[in-house]
Image: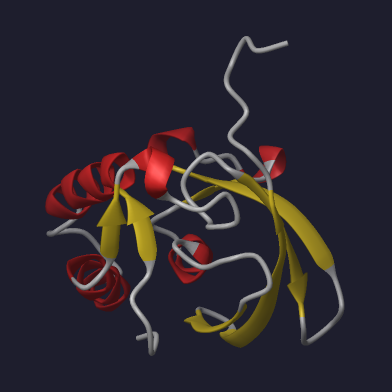
Length: 133
Protein backbone atom coordinates (compact mmCIF):
# COMPACT_ATOMS: atom_id res chain seq x y z
CA UNK A 1 0.00 0.00 0.00
CA UNK A 2 1.17 3.54 -0.73
CA UNK A 3 2.13 5.96 2.00
CA UNK A 4 -0.30 8.62 0.70
CA UNK A 5 -3.87 8.33 -0.57
CA UNK A 6 -4.41 8.33 -4.30
CA UNK A 7 -6.44 11.04 -6.03
CA UNK A 8 -9.28 9.69 -8.12
CA UNK A 9 -12.24 11.19 -9.95
CA UNK A 10 -15.72 10.37 -8.71
CA UNK A 11 -16.70 8.67 -12.00
CA UNK A 12 -13.54 6.49 -11.89
CA UNK A 13 -14.27 5.60 -8.25
CA UNK A 14 -17.82 4.59 -9.17
CA UNK A 15 -16.58 2.41 -12.07
CA UNK A 16 -13.93 0.78 -9.86
CA UNK A 17 -16.38 0.00 -7.08
CA UNK A 18 -18.65 -1.72 -9.62
CA UNK A 19 -15.75 -3.67 -11.14
CA UNK A 20 -14.51 -4.76 -7.71
CA UNK A 21 -17.99 -5.90 -6.67
CA UNK A 22 -18.27 -8.07 -9.80
CA UNK A 23 -14.71 -9.40 -9.42
CA UNK A 24 -15.20 -10.35 -5.76
CA UNK A 25 -15.31 -14.07 -6.52
CA UNK A 26 -12.63 -14.11 -9.21
CA UNK A 27 -8.91 -14.81 -9.13
CA UNK A 28 -6.13 -12.48 -7.97
CA UNK A 29 -7.98 -11.65 -4.75
CA UNK A 30 -4.94 -10.27 -2.89
CA UNK A 31 -4.32 -7.69 -5.60
CA UNK A 32 -8.00 -6.71 -5.76
CA UNK A 33 -8.15 -6.36 -1.96
CA UNK A 34 -5.21 -3.93 -2.13
CA UNK A 35 -7.05 -1.92 -4.79
CA UNK A 36 -10.18 -1.91 -2.65
CA UNK A 37 -8.20 -0.57 0.33
CA UNK A 38 -6.61 2.12 -1.86
CA UNK A 39 -10.07 3.12 -3.08
CA UNK A 40 -11.44 3.34 0.48
CA UNK A 41 -8.79 5.84 1.52
CA UNK A 42 -8.59 7.70 -1.81
CA UNK A 43 -9.25 11.40 -2.15
CA UNK A 44 -12.32 11.31 -4.43
CA UNK A 45 -12.87 14.53 -6.39
CA UNK A 46 -15.14 15.75 -9.15
CA UNK A 47 -13.39 15.37 -12.55
CA UNK A 48 -12.80 19.13 -12.93
CA UNK A 49 -11.05 19.16 -9.52
CA UNK A 50 -8.52 16.46 -10.46
CA UNK A 51 -5.19 18.03 -11.46
CA UNK A 52 -4.17 17.55 -15.10
CA UNK A 53 -1.03 15.60 -14.09
CA UNK A 54 -2.91 12.89 -12.12
CA UNK A 55 -3.23 9.44 -13.70
CA UNK A 56 -6.90 8.61 -14.23
CA UNK A 57 -8.70 6.24 -16.53
CA UNK A 58 -8.53 7.14 -20.25
CA UNK A 59 -5.62 9.60 -19.91
CA UNK A 60 -2.63 8.61 -22.05
CA UNK A 61 0.61 8.47 -20.07
CA UNK A 62 4.28 7.65 -20.51
CA UNK A 63 6.23 5.68 -17.93
CA UNK A 64 9.91 4.90 -17.51
CA UNK A 65 10.94 1.54 -16.07
CA UNK A 66 13.75 2.49 -13.68
CA UNK A 67 15.13 -1.06 -13.72
CA UNK A 68 15.89 -1.28 -17.43
CA UNK A 69 15.40 2.25 -18.83
CA UNK A 70 12.57 1.34 -21.19
CA UNK A 71 9.74 3.76 -21.85
CA UNK A 72 6.17 2.76 -22.45
CA UNK A 73 3.10 4.73 -23.48
CA UNK A 74 -0.25 3.41 -22.27
CA UNK A 75 -3.76 4.28 -21.18
CA UNK A 76 -5.67 2.84 -18.20
CA UNK A 77 -9.11 1.51 -19.15
CA UNK A 78 -11.80 -0.82 -17.82
CA UNK A 79 -11.21 -4.57 -18.27
CA UNK A 80 -13.59 -4.80 -21.25
CA UNK A 81 -11.59 -2.11 -23.11
CA UNK A 82 -8.15 -3.58 -22.35
CA UNK A 83 -5.98 -4.42 -25.36
CA UNK A 84 -2.27 -4.86 -24.73
CA UNK A 85 -1.32 -4.43 -28.41
CA UNK A 86 -3.17 -1.06 -28.42
CA UNK A 87 -1.42 -0.15 -25.12
CA UNK A 88 -4.74 -0.04 -23.22
CA UNK A 89 -4.11 -1.60 -19.80
CA UNK A 90 -6.89 -2.70 -17.45
CA UNK A 91 -7.14 -0.60 -14.32
CA UNK A 92 -7.60 -3.93 -12.48
CA UNK A 93 -4.24 -5.27 -13.73
CA UNK A 94 -1.35 -4.86 -11.27
CA UNK A 95 0.33 -2.25 -13.50
CA UNK A 96 -2.92 -0.29 -13.84
CA UNK A 97 -3.52 -0.35 -10.11
CA UNK A 98 0.08 0.74 -9.44
CA UNK A 99 -0.26 3.84 -11.62
CA UNK A 100 -3.82 4.95 -10.88
CA UNK A 101 -4.07 8.15 -8.83
CA UNK A 102 -0.38 9.03 -8.94
CA UNK A 103 1.06 12.16 -10.55
CA UNK A 104 3.50 13.03 -13.28
CA UNK A 105 7.00 12.74 -11.77
CA UNK A 106 5.98 10.20 -9.11
CA UNK A 107 8.04 7.05 -8.72
CA UNK A 108 5.94 3.98 -8.14
CA UNK A 109 7.16 0.70 -6.68
CA UNK A 110 4.69 -2.15 -6.94
CA UNK A 111 4.67 -5.91 -6.63
CA UNK A 112 3.99 -7.33 -10.09
CA UNK A 113 3.62 -11.01 -10.99
CA UNK A 114 7.27 -11.02 -12.17
CA UNK A 115 8.60 -9.25 -9.06
CA UNK A 116 8.90 -5.67 -7.82
CA UNK A 117 9.04 -3.00 -10.53
CA UNK A 118 10.05 0.63 -10.10
CA UNK A 119 8.46 3.06 -12.51
CA UNK A 120 8.48 6.83 -12.97
CA UNK A 121 5.46 8.55 -14.49
CA UNK A 122 7.05 10.85 -17.08
CA UNK A 123 3.96 12.48 -18.53
CA UNK A 124 0.17 12.46 -18.29
CA UNK A 125 -1.84 13.76 -21.25
CA UNK A 126 -5.41 15.08 -21.38
CA UNK A 127 -8.18 12.60 -22.11
CA UNK A 128 -8.64 12.12 -25.86
CA UNK A 129 -12.35 12.03 -26.65
CA UNK A 130 -13.49 9.68 -29.41
CA UNK A 131 -14.41 11.61 -32.51
CA UNK A 132 -12.58 14.79 -31.43
CA UNK A 133 -10.57 16.52 -34.14
